[in-house]
Amino acid sequence: MSIKKQFLKTRPVCKVTFRLSRDDARDAQSACLAGDFNGWNKSGVPMKRLKNGSFSLTLDLATGKDYQFRYLIDGHTWVNDPRADRYVSSGFGDSDNFVVSV
Image 1 (cartoon, rainbow, N blue to C red):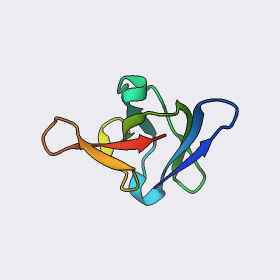
Image 2: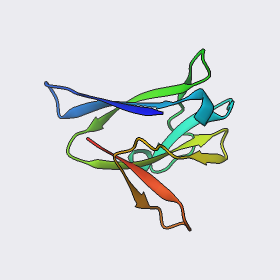
Image 3: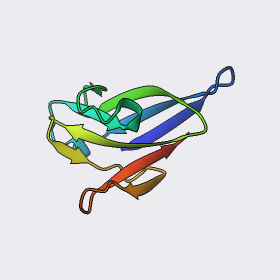
Image 4: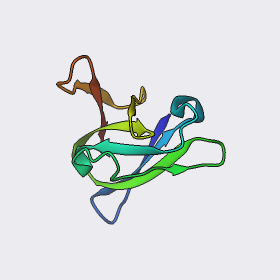
């Protein structure tokens, strides 16, 4: 997994690319990115499946904010991102949300 950030000079926006590796996707058929940027909608931001079995998605996020997120595989399995900028409690048991700061 990896998170790539590209800050735009012309606007207060950062292009953030989220990538879920094939190993982390566990041979999934679909993956979505859910977070506070889309109201934690489980199907609102589908990721593109690449030929090698990994998934990728690029979002434009406003700078100067922190965004909590998690990956959802095949509509039912949550996957964490160890390369997130930091982690915060989700409020649901021992589950953490992951934060990207832009």
